[in-house]
Image (tube, rainbow, N blue to C red):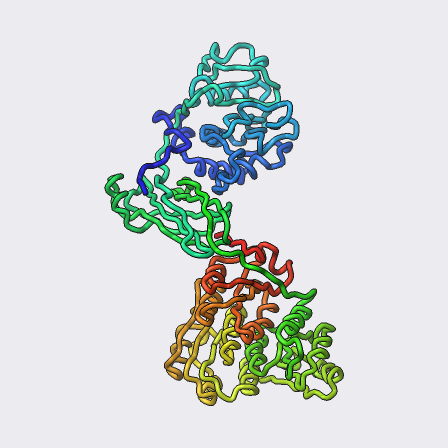
Length: 620
């Protein structure tokens, strides 16, 4: 590891401002400049011609602003071009662009691969600007607006600037006192072309009050399966004692934001700065070769300064994937039932598809009783549920919920399908009594009880899985309250409960309520993570040391997860949460920590996409 700083892409700006306030505090950081330009676009001060269809902003300036330009090097723009645009939009009410880099934004005719491969628009990074209009006036080469822009440019640009439209002017620009714009050429009268192609490394006469962060991306390695570790150091010369933020990008997705706050005495000694400036972090991604980019963020502006890009091979075997899903939530629940009980079951539980509350605790009850959890509508017993009841041929069918959610007619439907089965209902005066009655219907004792807020279905998914694994119930509570319902206290005593595990953070179940439970059952503790995905991860890792198969359900849509919680727990497999388009870091960490060799998605491609099956990491 070393402390030498790699050369930056931009040279320092000259100390003397050439055009007053507009040329003062002009950054040399491309991200800062591009961000100011995107803000000008948002304010309507900077526009582009309709023929480029927004691509100058979307493909070029926008990517520089958001830090993704490293993945599109052909779209990059010279820092001096960005500085010129910043000065221009500060000076005029409205500026229109028609061209920057023709690799990524063009009119369909003038590209870098056809008959008009401009050496300046197609240079990497591009060093040319085509101005279309200023303050709504077209730049025709000879009108007052054209000359006003030329005088502005001459005041701060370096010598030997390359400028078009010479044939439309009455005399050369140097002869008119514009000596820095001394390389002129013929061009059309519908735009003013300016470029740095013949100006060498000449810099603008602007001032810059901030310095970009400096640092080194020391190493990238893979210490274990699915793990990618990075180290380095960085600090901001404008605030040398402060620890700044570091971004970790993998294959174009930001996976981590950490602080460079660990001791690096070698940096302190070599750079003569105080404070802690080292960083070291590990992210989780799929095995294989990945491109890793590290950015340091300016302590004042938040602008990105790239510290380097490395290629690293993440070790570990590829994880197989499968999927269980149906056309509807009812089909999905039936398919989960088929997977769990291929030869039938003695009992089947049914809840309303519109009630995540009842499903949240019933999964563990059904698992204990030895049957699946199916879904119904208030208006009809769905065909998928009817067919699954016929296939299961249970001796008992238990509906959980009141008559508003599940009318008596649905029980009659089930009896018609299974004439010899006992069909019953479990309900109560409210959701909490219904849950207690469901627990009492199956459990005569429960050394451990899992507690969740009745409105937190994601916590219920995690709790339901571990409860089913342990053969224990899930109790729902009014989380924000500060007192234990006396009926809950009675149930805990009747079940001879010795341990309570509250699943969910203080925003779900209040600290006061947890304390009241601890007064009844001293061995009471809370389990939760930074978010719903993190809570599911912690519950899974606390429950399963290792697991060959893990199941993934949507963390944004409840039916699949709630109907699967009992099945997966009963089958001794963890149940984790994913987003529709990617897998969160916490979920990936659990998968690799438990040495999972196969993941099974529960839900169709619209709920969990193909990138989830490929275990694509989510970005921040």
